[in-house]
Image 1: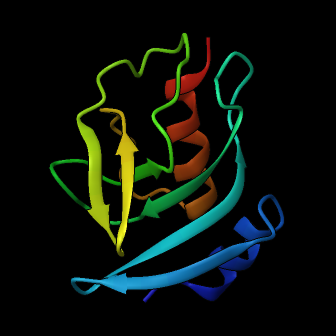
Image 2 (image 1 turned 180 degrees about the horizontal axis):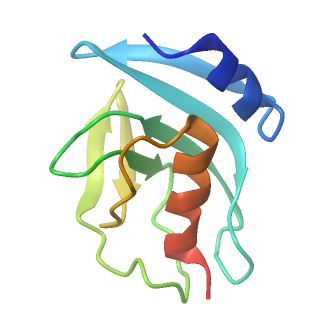
Image 3 (image 1 turned 135 degrees about the horizontal axis):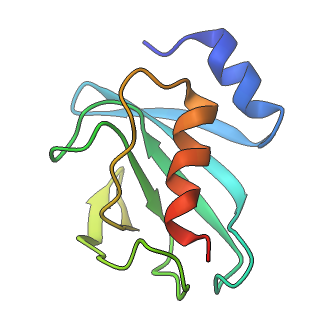
Length: 113
């Protein structure tokens, strides 16, 4: 179960968030996730997996494969089916013990020039 105060804090940056569960994991769907400058598309839907998955502390899946000039160039999740939709994610390791906001901000570094 995700902490309500952390979800509320994340909603200060991204007001449209919903939670959904698959395989005993609660994912957070983040609408209108604005990516760093230079990313195309600039705005996507994000799907945050805030727990260990595929050897990563957390994963941020995107609704589209994004063209960008950041360091996250290895798209190792290519059209993965989660919650009935296709998602993409770059290989990006975050630090353990982060809050939800810290996770999202850390993942966005993958797309920053």
